[in-house]
Image (cartoon, rainbow, N blue to C red; front, side, top):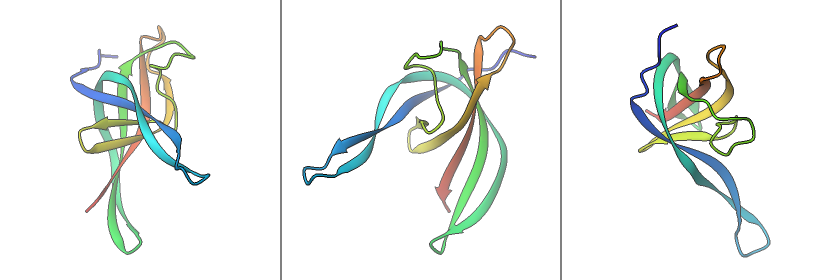
Length: 112
């Protein structure tokens, strides 16, 4: 297995519920830190959402590993941000037997 090319800087974000002042909440995203990553597209498709075509691409994102329980370790339902691009993390696993890297299975969506 070759070494990943960690050549893209991504921001790891987690959902955060903030009070809206009326007894409810609003969900926002809070930055947890930055990761250098390798992003590889796997497959893509188009679907309609509320009558608007939406492009969906699944990606493998490789980052340096962080220990379990660390805020720097990506988890499902978090996301990576690269400028305006968003990658929703669906699953995370170790990439190599030594546990030096993690592979995040993610999905990028954008209106076409």
